[in-house]
Every structure is written in structure tokens, then in C-alpha cells.
Length: 281
Image 1 (cartoon, rainbow, N blue to C red):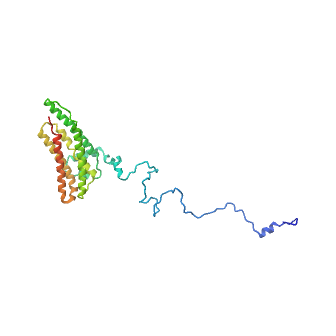
Image 2: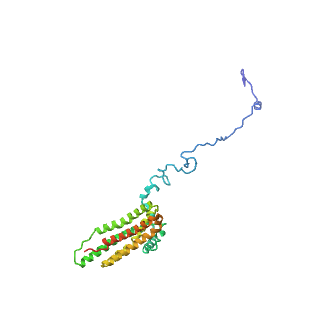
Image 3: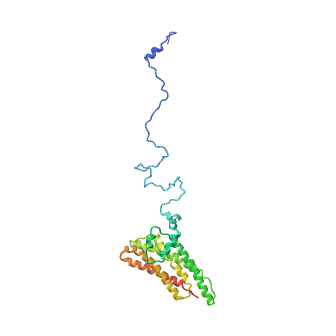
């Protein structure tokens, strides 16, 4: 130390004795308390109250995507799903062996086991195929029979295109409107049945009319009446017996409902006889 131009030396050892030296700390690690802050965006959406990893039930996921968060894919739930092709795809996913087995079952109406065998997997492919085949057979057989009858009597013959449109309206309309009306009636009487199962039952009940139409080429009016009557009786019995066990839960009105189903099916056979089994020259 300098005093008045003179330097005074201070022994470092003495100073060090009174003031301890501080060693070099090197790298110092600073620890902070764990923060409750969350990163953004959060890694997983948490629900209300429960704090679970799934969104709450009342969460609005209208615009949530599937998989990668895309919003271009249609939603699989809701009533709009009924208007998509995928909603009806399972009803057409049947094997040929299944359809053939159900066709055979429709030819034995007194068994009454069709609804039990098709309860787990009713299909719409069979009814659609049967109605389409009936339209083709009715148009072709009717045209052929009338053509032969006109040529036999040496009269002029003209093709009737209304036979195709009339057949399509009868078969497609019957297999659609009648099960739909029956579905409403059974629901009203507290004996509801599956709508698709009714479509399936009524569709297969028309299969017996395919061989009946083919036999109508025989030019005997009494024979055609017998064929139409037998086919109508088999079809009506097939529907009535398969619905009997289910409709019995409707109480006293079950007999009236079953009788109406039977008579309506017979009425269809009479209509088909008058317009498809009858040859007019």
C-alpha cells in the first residue's frame, strides 16, 4: 500500500489468514421447483373434472377428425349414416349357399322356422334378386304366351311394354310398402319387429311365384288358376306361420293381424293371376 509516496507492502499470508479465500465453484447447478404449467398444445386432451385422457361425454366433437385429425372423412354415426351405401352393405354380404338355403326354406312354408334362422343375419340381397327375377320372368313369359296365342289364332301381335312397368311396380312396391305398413302396425300393438327382417321375410315369400309363372305357359285356364292358388297359399302360409309366434304377444288382436297378413298375400296371388297368368287375345 502507498502512503505519502511510500509504498507499504502487505503480506498476503497475513491477509489470507484474516480473510479466507473462496474456492472456484466451477459449474453450479440451479434447481427450480416443478412447475404446474403445461406445454401447448397439450399432448393429450383431458376431460372435465375427471382429468382423464379422453374427452368428456358432453364434449363437442363435431369437427373432430378420424385418425390423423382430418375433417374430410364423413362421420360414421348419426341419422345421416342411414343415407349412405355403407349402412346397407352388411345386408348384402351373404354367400350363395345362404341364399339357396333360404330359398329352399321358403318352399316349405309349414316349418315356420325362417325367422329364427335369419334373425341374426337378415339380408336384402335375396329379396332384391327375387323381385328383379320376377319382373323379368313375368315380362318374358307373358310376352311369349301372348305371342304364341296370337300366332295360333293368326292375329296381329304387338308387344306390351306396360307389362314390365306394371310388374316392377307390383313386386317392388309390395315387398317395400307391405312390410313397412306391418312394421308400423306391430309397433303400435307393442309387438315390434325388425324392419329389415320383415323385408327379408316378404321378399323370400315371393320366390314361389317364379316357378308358378313359368308353369303358366300351359294353355289351360283351369290349370293356371290352380297354379296361382297353390302359389298364393304357400306364400301366405309361409309369412303367417313365421310371424305367428311373434305376433301372439299382441294379445287378442294377434288373430286379426295374422288373418289380415294371410288374406293380403292371397289377394296378391289373385292380382297376379288376373294380370300375369291370364292370356288375352
